[in-house]
Image (cartoon, rainbow, N blue to C red):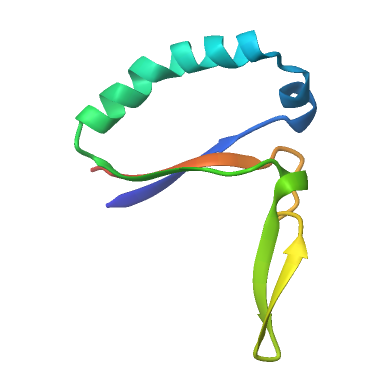
Length: 87
C-alpha cells in the first residue's frame, strides 16, 4: 500500500531560524532520510515552498489560472512530502 506522509512547519518559528539552525536540522534528518531511501520503499520525496512563496494552478472555465498562495491555507502548512510503500 502507498502512503503519503506530510511534514508540517510552523511558519512563525521557521522564519526565526538562522543558517546554523538549518544546518543542525539537516544533520539530524540526514541519517533518517538515508535509512528511508536505503529501504527501497520511497516512491517520491518533495519539498514545498513557504506559503507566501507558493502559487496554485487552477483551471477556471477552461483557462489555467495561477493564484498566489498555497492550495490549502492551514496554520501549519505542508513543507515536504514522502510517498512510501509499506505494509
